Length: 275
Length: 275
Image (cartoon, rainbow over all chains, first blue to last red):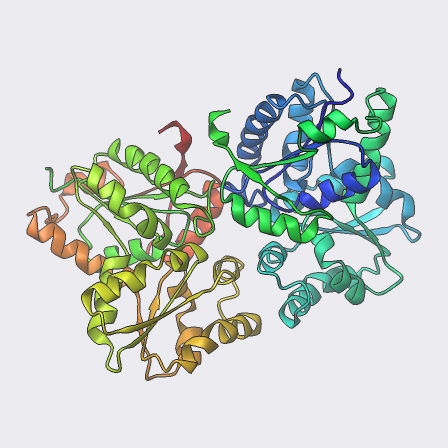
């Protein structure tokens, strides 16, 4: 396997960019090919069967870009499709759930963990299952927050309506005295300051995007696939970070530029249904 | 053409059921085959090219059900795809926009009309264009309301958060002194009481679902395709109303039963990408 090959990262849309951002920070030499399935977003309200079909199509596309490993940067797709597609693949495929669940199980002091996510992630019960596989005695309370994604995409990151909705969603979790909260959807780190304020300083917020970037780094080290310094030729000949979407490339580019450290110059639109 | 054949009705998801409901009320003898594209919802944030591709697939599916006419019960698809797919079709295809626009142009007294819809419908400018084709002197103000669909689907039809969001979205329109408001998304009639209260009694709310059912009735009469009384054999042998979706049939059935006059017993899931 070519260690200079890029890492493939995919999500239903823009949310997975919070994962790509952490990979850029933690292992800055790695090249990334990102795919956002903007024509079929959101995944959170779709069935397992559909999510597996979509994930297979996306992985077939990413393989055409000669990726050396794949990160499913979407909680719903990690919940529903990771096991199936990882078993079918001859390159490593990781999701965002295992690293987040492991961290939550390690940092809780009182044994009470909260998980927030989309309907799909919460219905799957995956965080609860993975956390209790590690430490069966932990109490895990889940809460679906279906309005958070539209609120983030509407730009209402700091707004009284978002506060009100968040306050309703979090009240169950607060009444359980959780001391650890897993942000189980890739959009949610963008609501971090609201969640921090409502939950208080004593609750640890676990961001699976951050933990997944660390897991990817260790995985590449273990397989001796970590990319060393960029070569001059690289810099000249190809884009280090490439972005592909299934629809509306311009809107994606604008959002991506607003949350990534460097400007996203071009996003290519492809017909994902052909893969 | 067989006048006992059903009418095909499609939408990106559940919203078009408000149109199906009006058809059931206005022309109760007609059979309906409804398709909701629940695997690819929402359409409001997707491109014209994508919406045309999806609409063609759905029409190919509806033709397998021997429909005699097709209603595009989705504003975004009507805006982006109606002209293209109607030109390709040898059976009548109508959308929800023309009837709503004609009514708005006819009922306004002060010549100031507001239109609310998804990003896609508003970006297309279609209501404004159609209204001003009829009466060029009319002033049309559009406003995208991207949070209304998630709020309706979360069941917050009567809620302080919905009031607050609606109040923000409508403030521009109120400051223009519109006397007519077009509900340019099929979900919005479910927010009718909130919109009525915020806009006041002097503003006429135009529901394109209602106007479209009337247009369909006239169209079928003109072509001598209106269905007469149901036959006894009909009642026994086939379902009068049939529902198909591309994903999560159970969730659809629950929502459909909550807004249609009769219980929806079964919804069939099909793979729309095969058409």
